[in-house]
Image: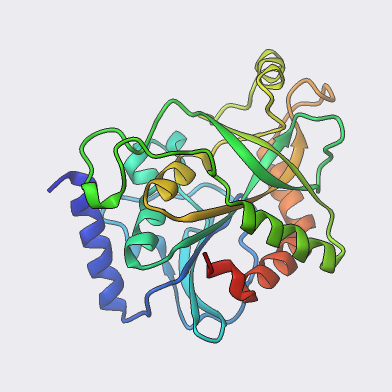
Length: 278
């Protein structure tokens, strides 16, 4: 048994000891975006209770997990915060919560993250629907020997972000009066912010928004057959766009300011039966 497989077996055993129902949907919140999504039917407990390796948090990521019942007959596991490779986790540890959710039964993954905006029309507070991604983290969670039943050795990534889920998100945003833009995301290693020269490179590659998460989670989720949807909050203009220095507190402040519209949009999505269809 491989190390990732053994770790996940332990995670499933810990979940079962909690007596929680198995999820249909997994939700992962980004920096400063751990909004309330309803009264939990399980938890919250520290994420560390499910992980068979040491956990340390980043400011803005509570690292708690709970179970929600957002609609009759639907259960969601909600990760308030995520793990990042820049914290020292390897690729398999970084995506552990997503893999655990899938092996427990979740077929849909909904994520939020905080990003820097590279386009001039993107301002702090804007929400951006991710249409595609470029993984520049320097890791891939599919390296090594994984159980063949998890997915193919060479998974297709053409539909990394599910088109039907993106249409659903645009529909819900319009009904709520929430402006939802769209763009290409790049996952970067961090934790240092990008330099102005790196921003120019990213723009040349066709990147609209950049962050330090998500890309590995999407690769792991697609490998396991999950449908993915990710909504980014522009917390700051990327380095060199305005000439102002970047600061993590700015990211958290943007999350607090946008919490209401993120909460309304996620709540509407979780309540719609189409989220788990297909």
